[in-house]
Image 1 (spheres, helix red, strand yellow):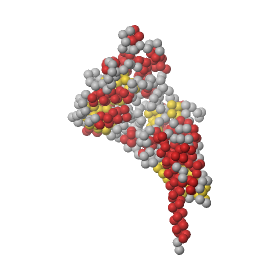
Image 2 (image 1 turned 180 degrees about the vertical axis):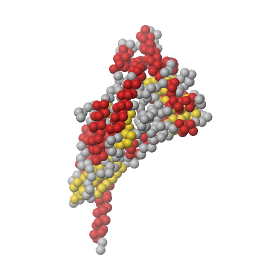
Image 3 (image 1 turned 90 degrees about the vertical axis):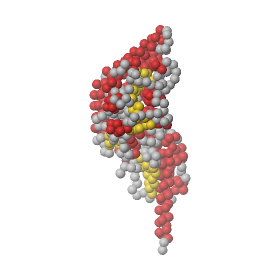
Image 4 (image 1 turned 30 degrees about the vertical axis):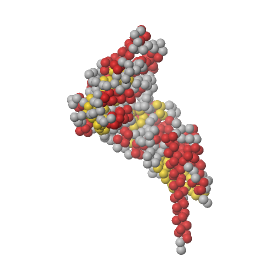
Length: 386
Length: 131
């Protein structure tokens, strides 16, 4: 098969789509007003931000006043969790899961240092949070549950709607990090029964450095940052107008195209998984069905993920791994370890995350280059039974 | 992240594979990151006549093993034992800071092989001298 460039790391980031860039351009050039200014240039920018907020609200089944623009997913998570905790003045109990992104997990660990009680729920071997464990963890002091909508590494889709319903009847707040889900799954804040929802534009073909936080009407949050009155003081600082416009345009299109995109990605995903599982000693990580349409995660026994990524890169394929060698910390993925994988399988993991630009030809190309790479690395491996 | 020399040794590793009739086999592993390395030696007249490696690890670990085999091929055991992880990393033209421990593995596996060979030699000598 002819060599080609294949980007299968959409879980890391996605390319900015043309329509979003077009919508942004005027606000990067001629329409440079500050939305807080009184003059016409400022009013023009304000109008763009207001319209974007309406679009985002519509996409999520929310009201415009419930949408706050932030600097991205990490910032939204920090504002929601820290903001809810600040009102508790260092006392109370919060619950999260072992497979959250560090932008949630490390915030919770910080709060634990500050005196809060924190329960980190385990997950099953598919990466699912067990509702029974969650119910058992609930106590009179529990004020917040933060569980992701879908996992970034293995794509497992969590039962947020049920968690939300369970929490709502007990008066407990629910935050969900929907960074991976928005643009791949239908996300409706009412159906999910959540109080806070995090999203990030660059995961659905919008620009980087811009995200949003949904805060349900009537829910109080104490601002983490102090400054001007922007975003009703929850996220002060001059608005990233172009980013906000780009986010809204990308989200509007992602939601409109969702049914076709889901079908397309699911087809590619299942073809890729079936092809990979034909190789010896390969296991699928994550849930067989409750899975993001674009997520593939497998472990190749006897080989290490970084050497696999390097080999794939030399063949034009961009992917990622939960290997210790790619983590920057010498520890393998906390997600795979929480799912009970042994060190070696976590080490040999490969994530291929699909996006709207990928084709059947891309999948077949990847399936043609992987077996020889795996064979070569296994032949070299000190662990492979030669 | 990696320079061209590292990528070259990763893509075209020298002396990769097993050696069924090795005179000594050295092993090393990182408990922390999980990488594992084996070095096989064929020794003739106190010199390394042949060397092979097997590595389960990242690009830096594979490249370190590969270049190490080139560095010590034909060398005396005295010379080979003096090779340090620093020498391996330098010969590769440098490694990213977090990957320096990978070059440790290569030097450690070589030293382990030489030590085992010498221990076996002493034992054989002991046997030969015994009445």
